[in-house]
Image (cartoon, rainbow, N blue to C red; front, side, top):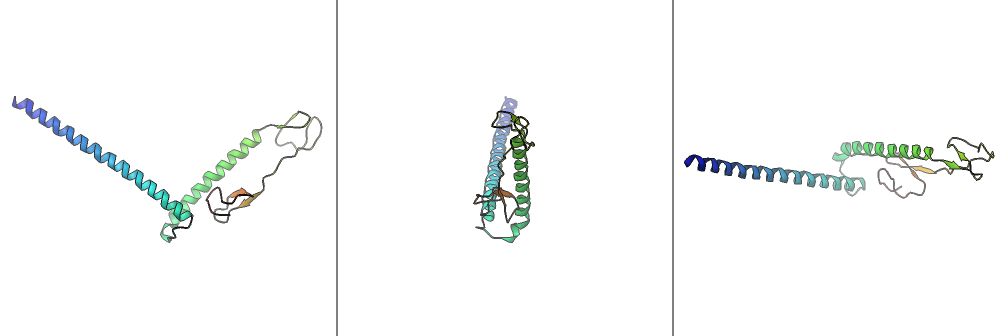
Length: 140
């Protein structure tokens, strides 16, 4: 009988230890998520110049370079998507994006050009009427 009660007690202790380990792991995950949220809030305040601290410069510059890479690659995707769209002439013919004139009626292809302005912080191109940079968020 003692053997059974010893096994029962050991199992009970192991189960309690496992519950405690699980509680510790859940607390670590919650802490990591809170630290991540706090880091994002601090980074946003640094970018909006609410916090000025030179010790963050290297990390913020690396993040800005990553943001620029993401932004510029999204622009490249947008440009490729625009090139794949068909243009229909007034005469009804489908014109290739690279063509300057309609092959059917000879009319000149009028493609609206986007006027862009360059950001002073990250050098990314933004639409001319933008108030804030779409890449880094600085007021243009």
